[in-house]
Image (cartoon, rainbow, N blue to C red; front, side, top):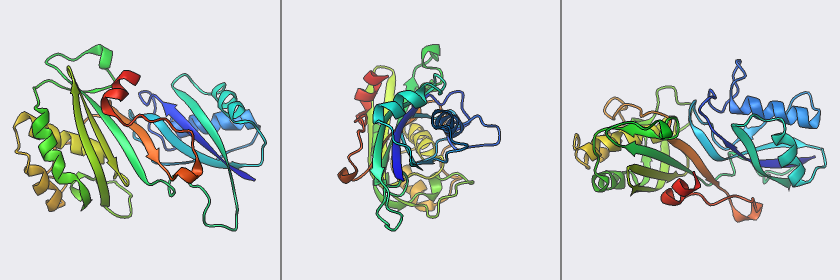
Length: 272
């Protein structure tokens, strides 16, 4: 028995999020169906690094599952992709040893050290169909420097309850925000958030609140007031999912995963 790790990329536009649902219309459902068809197994259960919502995209979601099949890495990639729809594709595969007696096996979720998300905002008076489902849209001008000043209050370890969805199932709201970068290229603004982990809707709630600051509706220090309040009702409404991308999951080098580096915001735009 061995543990297979996959890097999965997907356009979340037409999917009802990552996690399996009775409808079968999720990325996890599509991936597990493809794995079953490729391997001939009745069912294969996958574990992911972090679930994404409906409409959210995955540039490098990481998943694992256990198998006793012997296949080359390229066979896992090409074979599974043959059974996946155009909006989902395995980018790489890595076989890791599995010791059922050990607590030191790789785990897509619990071995993760940090997560990085990008949010792309199209800031223009008129919406562009070219960015439909690929970027959020806001028609009033926003000032990047004001948003950067507001974002600075969120760096460090905090209770992020004020930016947490009511249905969030995380055991604790305390997370460590390692960094927030806000970069602009023309009409596009890219928010890059890196943290130990994220609460449900946390990125979208933070982006929505930073937009309040960017328009002058709130002052930058308001972000600190919202954070300290722990009150979700004080923060801005949850912003649209269209521009949200799970960019990278950080793991220890010992696992030697063939991951891509897409954590620079403007570099990410060129990738798209």
